[in-house]
Length: 170
Length: 296
Ligand code: SF4
Ligand code: SF4
Image 1 (spheres, rainbow over the protein chains, first blue to last red):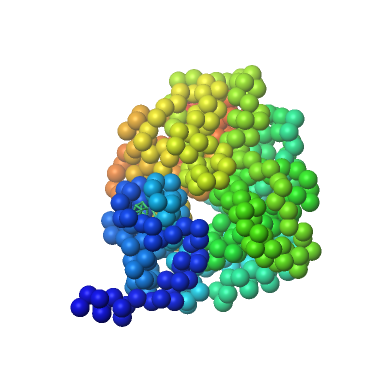
Image 2: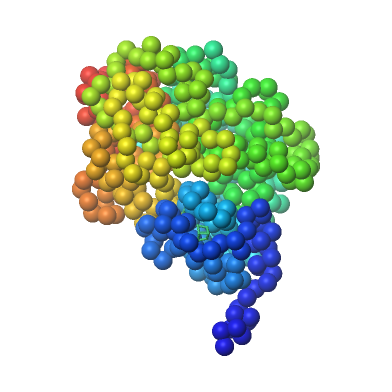
């Protein structure tokens, strides 16, 4: 029963993509000690977030279910799991690979991340310079603070094209 | 005198102006000559979740542009520092990746080079300028103020590449604060995360990370926190009020300073030269202790 259930759910194509993307780390080496989860920043505030389970689902090939849940976007990329993993699985690398796979497969990343990426393409930075408020509600800008104006990055036009190609249809 | 390219990244020159102001005013006084590097854009760090190659490409670009200038890079931001050191390592180890990136860059007239030294403020000040030199310049020691150093994740990890600090037992930040006359000490969450990267997923949970961190620091009786990362500053300083409301705990309140601001205060610079009116956390008490007023 379980065997047939698994066979139906396993997505080979996704599994092969993740294996390729996380090299030289190998999710298959995970022995489920959960050291990663005990160190994990996201686990501390989101109890259902557990990197050892993300790795377990990944190596079983139950990746579609994982991507559908959207939980991978909670990872803060703090790299603690990577430090503590005795098997050099580095769940953070697995999760970055899963995020890349999700985007390549048409899942939408969080909107703020898309906005940042669009700004990097168009301006070379994640945001244009903004006006900030002090505690006394005074408004400050680069200009009023006498900071030099920002310029576009070197060869911005060609950078824009390359980035657009790499980031796909965001 | 050491000469470096001032690499600002994204968050500092678009939002965290106090870091840029204080770095520009403090570092030259410590013998660091800052050379403008305006043609360098984003290091690609925020793009790695969308496409890792976009991250690699953006950092490969910065490394190559710096190599054209023949100067080391000074990254003020932890994310930038991690990106540049990580991508430098990846490109030096992976021949096919290097070829791929070289081709992308050649299309825009950039020759791929990775033979560039990368510094962060913390290791530049500790290892190159030196604690003793800083000590000599102190005019107004931060005596009697207990400051929690908060290096931030990407000053420490991943540790399979060269890092500004020891990933398990970071000491340099504390050494620098001690040189200013401040008291330092241990707290369990020193190597912890500020939660910034979780913001696009959930502000609520990210704020809980902030609240937990400040609570831990307060439990160990610190008067203030110091960081050298614009993301950590944004979370601990600017989002402190929101974190307090999120968890409904009035005790979540602590002054937060950039390392460069504290050095500036200790060597006698004015609050204006350090952008201190831009700090949103309650810094006034500490300034008062030092006999400095924000309006003065
Ligand atoms: S990188 Fe992500 S999964 Fe790993 S410990 Fe940090 S939050 Fe958890
Ligand atoms: S720490 Fe490593 S081996 Fe242990 S459960 Fe996590 S990924 Fe698996």
